[in-house]
Length: 183
Image (cartoon, rainbow, N blue to C red; front, side):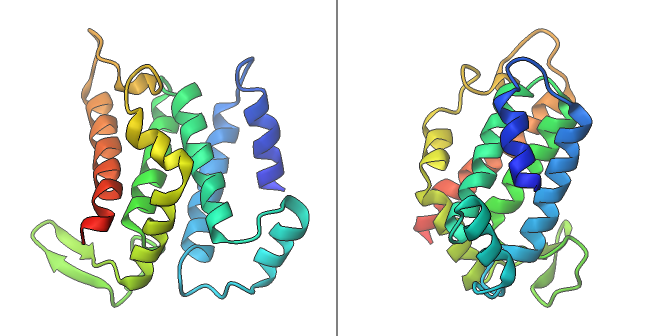
């Protein structure tokens, strides 16, 4: 139902949008990503069968395509709304890392680094990122990362620290996606 609601609200974004509803959808996407995206998820789960029946989303790649479409839509229409832009970019960042583990999961994939705990992406994580890179929407972002397409990238006289953090998160995620095939 959330994905159906997203399609409806996204079709009306040019006229008006609801910030709280967008933030709620982003929270849904984050929870969905943690639970249902990745190699440890059984692809024959009831959820994927139901998504196929109701929305025609037959596999994880199609679901990832919906995620990326939502990310692009939010960055296009909500580029001047910091809470939505930040949360959207965090979702992009998490997808570019590739592992679905929650931040404080205590998963054995955590190692201590100079900046505190960090995750080491395993082979399953890389598989998700490789699927992402093949999506045409991701290729669009990699080839069109300008303020013409994403307003938060524009430089203006009122640029603040939050705008710079958003740009940094965006380009960090794009950099990870570019480097996925380099090993």
